[in-house]
Image 1 (cartoon, rainbow, N blue to C red):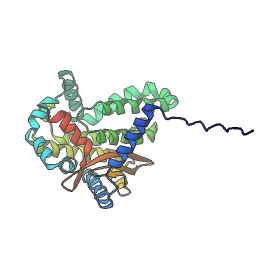
Image 2 (cartoon, rainbow, N blue to C red):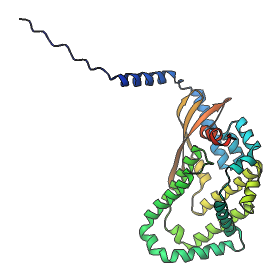
Image 3 (cartoon, rainbow, N blue to C red):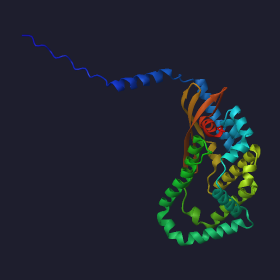
Image 4 (cartoon, one colour):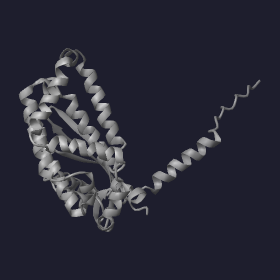
Length: 294
């Protein structure tokens, strides 16, 4: 007798999985192929963005992160936009109080005196709980950056990466060394005075050019403060690595990586192409989602 062999069992793909697979295949088919020339241009333009920070030239940075049409509208509507994003009265008062602390006569001595009084009782706690303090400070600063609605996503990612790199290599001596603190306070005070703003209302009355000129001065001061602690941001830019991770049509994603002291700062930026130039896609999104709404 002949024995009929059993037919192999065919496992059917669930209905939903079929549609999901089809959608994925369709998306991949619609995706523009890698364009080497565009990828190289995206990489070069991304380097220019970082070079504007290295200078620093914050007006140039704005030109390189936003397409001309949006940047022109930003400048035209600057007073309206500054008013729209103004701090609440309580926050403005805190800003003004802090500004006075860093610009008043003998500000360096006053800041040193007040910090000495706070640090002395905490010396043993600083020594024993320093890693916990570092973690708490990192979370605090990164949280503030994440909730800042005036920063693009790429700026937030860069800022959080900077905070992590700086605090991760921050020893207790940065707080406990009185001479080091004095040099840091001197640099902070010099920066605050060089910006030459009277109060928050004065800041909000600055036009587009004036604001970015003062922001450039402030950025330079922050870099000098980093040098007090052996963190030379510009020196790190000499070893800047820019890698194009993705490129399709007028979209690309680049990775920035550079050393700062003993740590590396690493973040990504989505780019979008307009008329042959690549810009920060998240800056454009911020403008369109929030800044351009009347």
